[in-house]
Length: 336
Image (tube, rainbow, N blue to C red; front, side, top):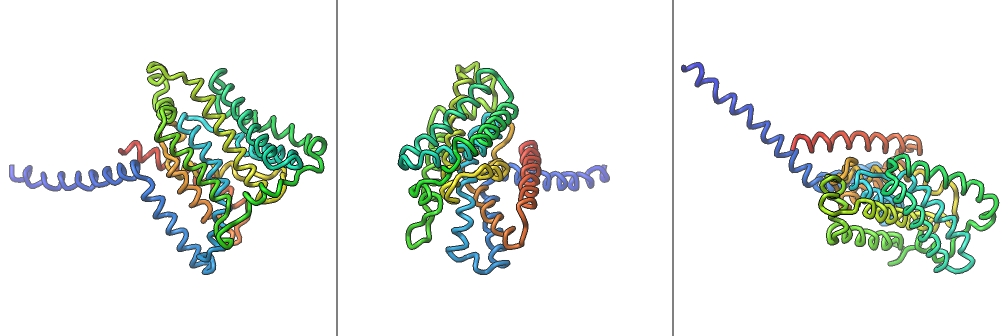
């Protein structure tokens, strides 16, 4: 009897660390923003140690220039990933919208911007019809759209759009212009507007609740009266619109449209959403986390540039981040 009673306390003691681990896992799963802020601060400190001038306004501004198009593209990815979808055509939509805006720039900034954004909506709606109505897998549908657009605009670049790839001065100002003595980019103001729109959409509207419900349990959402196809068509249309916004900002920053304009941002746009805690399986995620993910990638890009890492190394790193964090978040969700 004495031996049995003497072994009881160690068994209880072994349960305590397990409960602490489960509690920590639950906290990380419920509030990933805490970890993201810590990672962001740590990256800024490390970058500043490697390049002391980074903490100047010029250094931070350069990170912002890189983070803005990622944050806008990742907004579209976040909305779609909440429905367990994704948009592999969003970077090509961005490029195509920039081409159209550049082509129409001689007719005025308003016409150029409106037609560029309208193209994004149309292309996104086509994706939504394929996914929501014809039930095509999002990966297949958006990959096919990307291939179609790439083929069309590769041919048109030397015909329809030949010699008309320069962006309007107003769009250039939005893309790379600054104010407050050159310290704040206008593109950050655009991103703030996009962020407010997306945050209100997800948090304050019935449509936002339908996005979460459809991604969490599509069968229950349909039984409750949610018309899934309508939700998906609108979601992909919004994603296309956001892709067009990012394309105009990228075109404005460079000053002209190019077939390689936004292609390298596809993987970072997915990485920013995944870093922010958005589940690729749907129903879980916030745009607040995605914003932090985009800022982290902006600082990380500056760090890699200072270290002399090329574009290939950066793409490998982004892919590793997507795979690694997807695995980690799934484990945290299972543990909680």
